[in-house]
Image (cartoon, rainbow, N blue to C red):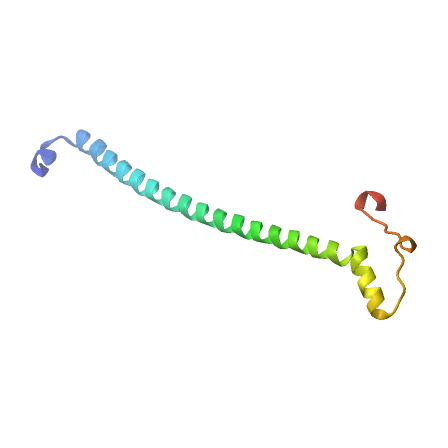
Length: 101
């Protein structure tokens, strides 16, 4: 096979060598692209897991905040401190970003 290749004129040898090099480069670049895609996919999955964990922690803190700010909690704390708590004597004000502007 090599002798047959060497017997061909140079004008036919160079395109074949160029074709072989291009195919080799294409195969290597395809493997590298696939490996990079797998790495990016894994990183994306990890970030999504972290985001969902953080969101669940935020939801838990919101629930805890609403429990601590509830009027029944205020009544328990007030009676524990010796104060007389009346439901009608308190008012709640909710301040949002829209109200601040």
